[in-house]
Image (tube, rainbow, N blue to C red; front, side, top):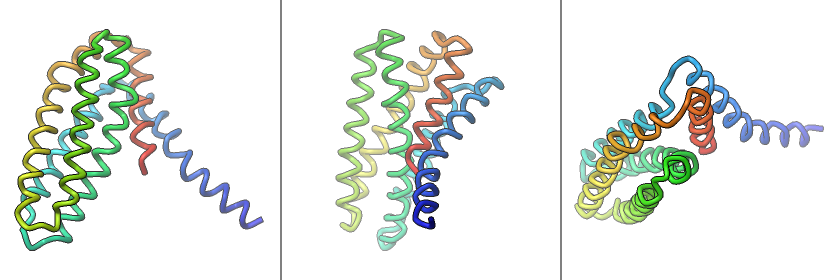
Length: 177
């Protein structure tokens, strides 16, 4: 009996957040919220986390590690939403196949940079060059999405589709706990 309750509790803890996030995103869009605002807010959070990591002192390995893990988690959640919802929309609905492929490729580059950064966090000085390269890539990528791709998608989405997209974005991000 207790084991069954534990299993049900564990399943609910994994399934409930994405379901609630989908509903939340849909309701927000119905109330007029821009479905891309969460992604733009993510960009600002990622930039803040990059600044925190870049400005951490050389002798603060624990602080660097904590900032890196926060960055990795946020970037993972954000990338999941874009790769599973936004880039397919760009490719299939906006007929921007090349743009979608380029954005996927930039995400792959970010993942490589993250791996290299993680492996260099304990080496004094070397991690600073890696954080600089990652920072430049993320800021350029975010600017491109916010100035070109998100406006393109906003123009083509009707109100109903915008609500659906909003719900899907929130759901995807909620999948990473």
